[in-house]
Image (cartoon, rainbow, N blue to C red):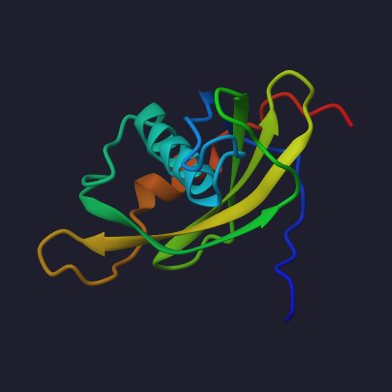
Length: 149
């Protein structure tokens, strides 16, 4: 089976700190589904920080069209993680949010991932163009401090 290969990055434009939830399985590490939920929570906060709700981003809705993740290390219940996001691959109807989860204390990489964001017309529920205002706002985001290697 071919493995998903994602590239690490340090030019993120958004960062948030989250806590891993209780384990789904007693005595176990944080489940892969829970790590995806942390990435989704960060995505929601990313749009919120821009002043949007995902159901109205410059008049369109934001849907997740696809998602890929590469697990690099375990995370554990109650562990504090940072989620860093960068905008990638702008297309006519969407773009990617690349993300990385790292241990907040050590900076150790836990996951790399990407969320494929699709703009959808609110009434027809069909994919539509990324609003120009959103494209401009995303293009103007400045990278935060680079992660120390």
